[in-house]
Image (cartoon, one colour):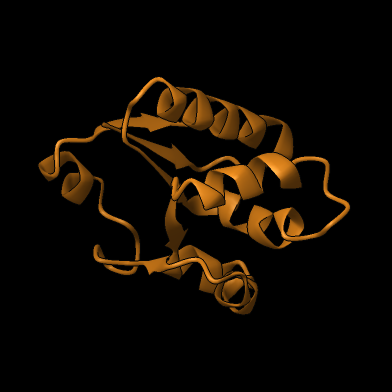
Amino acid sequence: MYCLYAFNGEMTCFIHVLLNGLDMAERGNKVAIVFEGAAVTLVPQLEQPDNPLRALYQQARQQGLIDGACRACSAKLGVLDAVKAAGLPLLGDMSGHPSMAEYIDQGYTIITF
């Protein structure tokens, strides 16, 4: 089980989160992708039909790999409404941020991007 925490807000970095998540899932691993930090700003971009990564993003969503986005960072960075509109769960069990310890307690190995 792997939890991929995406912190980097660069689309060229996030492609690796998607590719690795999909590859891991295809190989039979349980995968959770978490948007955290500046990466939350990618959600509204990925929701755009003309975004080149939209197909990979939608594939990851359809496979249930996207676990959610940080509530605090979404609010701070001005994308809270967009994340809600996208239908992504808002994660914030650690002072408004998603807790890595919670994933570790569930048996996930954390990988950060």
